[in-house]
Length: 381
Image (tube, rainbow, N blue to C red; front, side, top):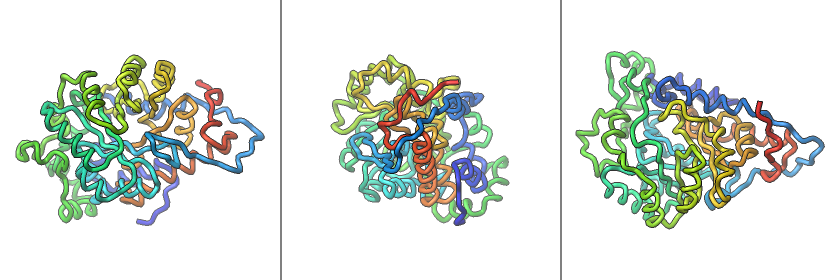
């Protein structure tokens, strides 16, 4: 392996080579016609950067504060489910890479590694992502476990009361654990490295949920079936209020896409909003997060941090998000490409690529700190 990667797209191509079809398409796919999935990335192309010349950029700093953590980059690693599908080192590899880069790592409720296992692996700042389950005791227990494990932030995802129509998963027969169907068997056999480790290092269970949900019911269940069976469709702002009252750390709401909701979240006491359409995996036709940023920024009072979640593929995308008012961005697929390509080393590679590109963009634009990145440097076209 040892191959050098020069951009996120090269990591994506290597991930495609390494993964059987069901795993890759689960990572890569979106909902319905995948309009929002495609729009998330392309929306950044509609903003051009107007550089400022003759600026001293000899002392460059990309440091900032994200969720109370002094971070070397305005970047966090977003929660992504079932990392074991992509590499046998699963969430451990991502968490270790985040710690080495001093970035906030986010663990998903539907991770294949437990809250406690991650806490025992890394000591750097961590965020736990939760959904509101029909069994409220399950959600309460997850919050208590998160407190006990020393996580600094809790993230409530609000855009997944029902599963998006992820047609690629239906076509590939995606399930957990992976199902070897007639349609997918050839693809599994052509990926011997992945297949060998699937048998040697299983770990395909939803580690945070195994004590609460019947294992026989979960066996072979598709992600969509799990969501539709377990997530509470009565989710409301009262649930965010409940979390605020039961969680003393930083509270993040993920999945907000309009200004009114952002204002309500700020009023309730959310410390940060992740502007997100779930990577284009839920409501197809929803706006790209970068396009929702400015109206949300104008609606709030500035007490709540804004994190653009979705579509980041270049360091210049980070620059554009900061210029338009974001406090930080988060990435999911880019580090998953790295995970699938090269395990922990690949995740570090993904972060390093974005870091170098962001620094270069800043210098070429005449900016030596995040404070220098201004909205007047961005022109929509």
